[in-house]
Image 1: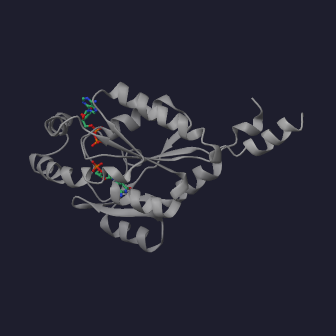
Image 2: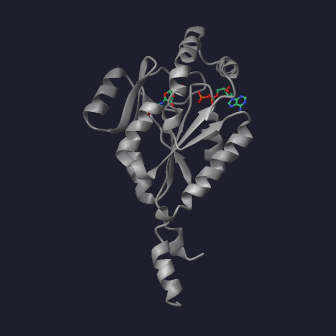
Image 3: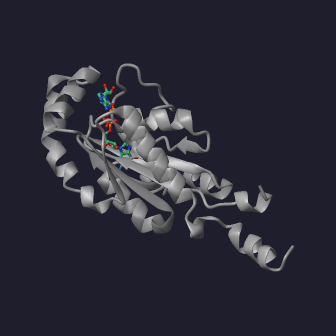
Length: 212
Ligand code: ADP
Ligand code: 5GP
């Protein structure tokens, strides 16, 4: 393929869902399947869950450190979620966009709104719904990482999170992980082909019609 045709703008892919619907699972599968996608690692004041790794799943920080990051303008967006604060560091997003690679964000509707305001055109917003509320609760329990209190508060928040579904470009129902992953990959493939993202098209077509 003509090298110039490979030049494209990076995508900012947002995956949101009520907690437990499966966005971390789908994110992990997408990252394994597609080497052009990297994940944005958020900072959070939430304590680490069993199995989580600092600086891989999140940058786990103290409240004071989070305050400092806000004050120094290090976040492209941040929001309170449940009893904690979560934020997206600005520097890796800028670097990935410059390099033309795609970045995946596992963030909530508040962060999505802020990212949309900051970088509208580059954003692809995907919302993941569970097949039913009963299944959402089963998945939260099945994950085995949260206390009964935490599960209860996440279930109470689910309806309000789901109420933001219409603010997204795509809405998927995660019944089967393989099927949901395939749908996410189809969206990413189509979004990469959007005319305005293919920066190499203008010179390519110019040469094409001039017979070069
Ligand atoms: P989220 O990141 O949205 O909070 P997770 O990806 O942690 O959700 O998924 C919650 C639990 O549900 C995990 O134990 C995961 O293995 C399971 N899970 C995810 N997708 C499915 C699915 N399609 N069918 C059954 N279980 C699923
Ligand atoms: P969890 O504690 O289950 O990892 O995440 C709780 C919620 O916080 C999820 O809805 C997740 O998408 C959201 N979240 C994670 N990181 C960020 C972030 O950087 N910004 C925002 N706004 N939300 C985030």
